[in-house]
Length: 420
Image (cartoon, rainbow, N blue to C red):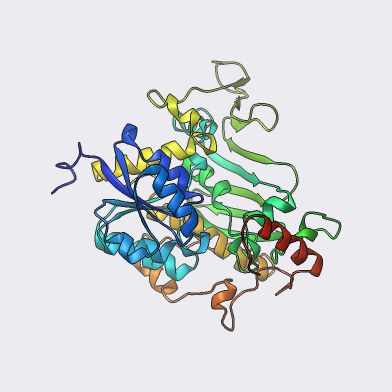
């Protein structure tokens, strides 16, 4: 049956991951023409609870999950394990929406692009930050020509946490959050800039900020990575972008775009949903105030998004995924954009370990570009470490402190995790 023939039927969806995935599961409802039919996770206790709450089938085995009668799969499993599951779902004739990152190695990015092309199924990268209210408004302003040609941009995703919370969401010394290099979690900062300006990264330089010795939070964790990273990217338009992420003090989600005729950003203080547009009309007939600060409206018909998670972003991811499946048109954040912004983190880590030299971001829309990276399995994952693979920190391969391990174990036990 063609997509057109199925357009009025609910899109039957299965979700992998009952932690972060619970938000997707609850959002995949009739309002968006979706029907949740199955859940999959190795966490049996929570899987059973959520499955009973939502009255859907549950699976601990991914292969059996893929045999369920459904149209699409949403992947909300661990950060570094998305691409293999996405490729398997595509081969099983399922549409896929995948959480960040799209790929964890350059070779995975190649394989994922090839799989989407081979199967012809819809793939959407579930990056929610572009769909926050202020970023949608800045895209509208940019597309309307209000600030001219894109010249420079900044994206910040700064998200400090308490030691207890860090340990709670990272149970076990081998949990990915405890060893993920500081550049890898970059798509929340990069995606809004790409979305607003319709540009793509072509080159990056990575810089790493190490943990301070007097940081009382870090001392109470088993984190083996660095505190944060700064990435400088050159875009295909020639514009320059600065990205800052992740565990510095001073909670902030912020985007700034400078153009040839103006500048815009969301507010750093007060209501961060508000947009500041500044246009010095030096050689133009003045058409509006030099500076405007206002709270934009949601796109017409989507007012309900304001009640969804991540500033409305979670609603729009499900919405655009469903629209892409029905129409057969690729979503804006398609496999190529998703892989490109994920590769920024990988290549920026290469750069940081080599003295912050510029490193290319290949365009995997081109098969000739893919061939160069098809066997590039360079990975910081300690579970698959081979000679030549990178460490999780610019300081090398570290060991957790006795103090940090003892505190982490107390937190883990408190929340039902008894491992190391």
